[in-house]
Length: 390
Image (tube, rainbow, N blue to C red):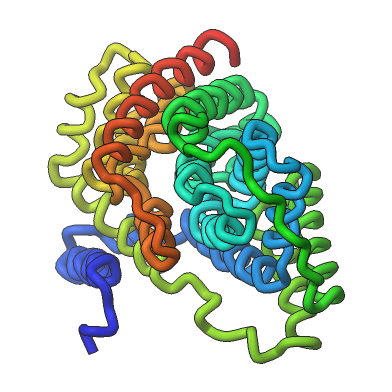
């Protein structure tokens, strides 16, 4: 039985079991656990719905069609393709969550690479870096944003109004690093690429329904509908189309059980540890002077050490709700910063697995060094934009 589980799966289950032990032994009071579950309930509904939408949208060939048409529109010019890919990855991250970009868009782009004779590594690095650094603008862009919305006390439009400048800066910094280290001719070696031959859509009805579901989700977000309701509405449309035309593709594997287990365990373990000394350590690390740069740096450092979700959850508990600047700076640290280690975010771990399946070799030394450079430069520039421009 254990052979069916990977190391990451065992960690997730172990985290949940540890949380249940804390609850059973009284280390975590029942009332605190109930409060945590009331907080994450809508987030789990959103996660399930949006991942179902993203998975079925991929099955309906929406991502494939857009990626292929981008390559055709670029007409063999790598510079044009670079701007198209960064825009596409940023858009998907902002509106459909970073996991969609890292987990679902990555295989689409890597499958496109051999067809158009495009260097695969630049495409892969574009998806994983922008999955993290383009996840600042909206609450739905990253689970860390959703975790912080209650305490930050901003609705989606107010959140975007504070984060538009940091988001533009973080994307710009990412583009600079992507071009310098992966996309320029000296790195990719090819002068031009071959535009692919467009393949027909297998089922136009599914393609249309999936596209409509994604558009509906975005429109509902702009109308300030709760993210769980917006994602659920989109999921009903897309899943309904598959129920009518391709019922065999609606399987339990669409439900992100691993992520649900991880988040549930996280919301049991971190509050327990915070009650028993973790909060004192976090307070010492971020200081009491209200420095947003230090807060962002601690968030980024902990993300690359232990993963960005527990890092955010641990630090957020010691920042007062009135200190909005530092709460947003922490999001910068835990969103832009996790680009160094392979375990810094769940999306990065899954991205590495996707690269392995497509035989794309990721040079680890280069990945670590360029990621460290982007994390430092991106963090400083993005926090500056948060403090000075937003």
